[in-house]
Length: 296
Image 1 (cartoon, helix red, strand yellow):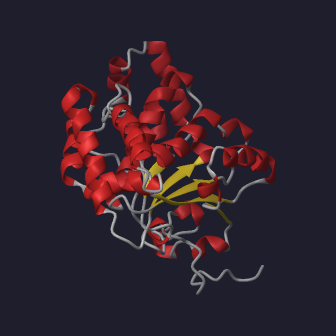
Image 2: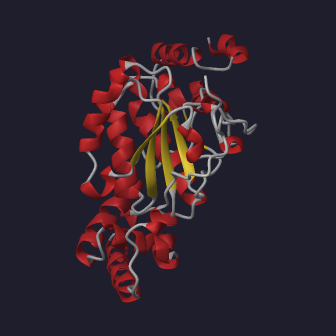
C-alpha cells in the first residue's frame, strides 16, 4: 500500500464565516431584531432561560446569526429565534447532568480544531446505542455537546464529524440523525461549517441519501466525505483522536465534575431497576475494558 501523506498541502476544511457574509453594514437590522426579542421576553419571561436572556441583551452575534441564516429577513429571523429560545428552555433540553457512562463510551464528544479552526463534534456511529427509554435524554446530551462546541467556537464554526468505521444498519438511528442535523441548522444557525462523513460503507449509502434530503439547498453542499487518506485534508494528525488515525493524547472519554451515576440518573428520569440494568448492559460493551465489569 502507498504511504499516506499526513501533511497534505490541500486543505478541504471550510469555514462558515467564509460563506454568504454581507459586505455592507446591517447593524440596524440586528438592533431591530433584538428589540423584537426583548419585547417577547418582557411579555413572558418564563418562556426563556436566564443565560439566553443575557445573550439577547449582550451578545450581538447571538442575534446576527439568525439574521444571516434568514438572509437578513427580520421577520423570518424573529420567528426562528423565538422558536429556538423556547426550545432551549424545554424541560428535557434543560437537563445539564448526565451519567458517567454517557461520557465513558466515547460516542459523542468535542475535540481539537480542524485545519480551519472549526470545533468538531465527533459521533462514533458504531458505538451508538438504540435505547428507547433514554432517547430523549440522549438528545439532550447531544444538544449539550453541540452547545459546548458552539461556545468554544464563539458560534462561528462547528464541524459535525460522523465516524462510520465498523457501523452497520443496527447502529443507525434515523430519529437521532434527524435531531442532530435539525438542531445544528435551526438552533445554532450559521454555526455549521460542514458535515464530514468518514469511511462511509456502501451498505449505508442509501441512509445518507435520505439524510441529505433533510438539508436545505444551502446546506447540501456542506456534506463532505473522507477516508483514511483524505481525513488529513481536514485535520492535522495531532488534532485527531486515535480511532481515525490521530495522535492526540487528550482523553475524549473524560467525565466532567458535574456528571452523576447511572443510578442517580435513573431516579431523576423515573426509570425502574430493570430499565436501569438494561441500560447498563447496553453501555457495558463500549466502556473501557477496566470498567466493563463495574457496569454490572
